[in-house]
Length: 223
Image (cartoon, rainbow, N blue to C red; front, side, top):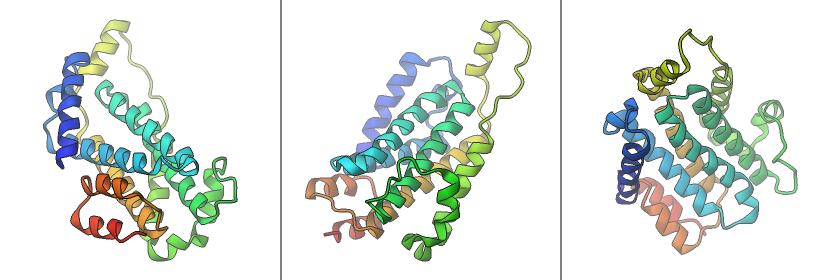
């Protein structure tokens, strides 16, 4: 983790210990999987903040950031339906951001998923980043398919809620969250560089604290 993210990680540790002391995640916060989830979630959030000074971009980045915050709230609750919704919403507005950057005069904030998917091969970014674009649509589709309620087992309200908070996380769930959020962060960096989004010197400095040297070079070369 970069220093900026490490400081936020310790704040999140305090938050979990204070408000979710009995949850499994509060006892497993130092696992590699969770640290990677937190690192990429916070890094993507910081990247969105760097774009928020533009009123037009903020329409998209503020919603992405809102759902990233929700993700860090729902993970300790072990609330997979809401986790799926949060990730899906992040992906949806990353896609809408791309369509806005392709055609700023078009109303893309209300553009539906089906319309975006049917026209993805017309995007300028698609030619050079086909796999990343395809993977983004795949994540949206898979998270949408998982947004359904399972049958509720019998038991008292208290026992049901206690079991939900204290049961072990599925390792496969954590790995999927980790990979999906990492993809979103990497793809957002690609979007910034591909469309040559203008960043101030201060914004570039903030970005340099959360990205690898490869991305740092590309970002500082933006006009």
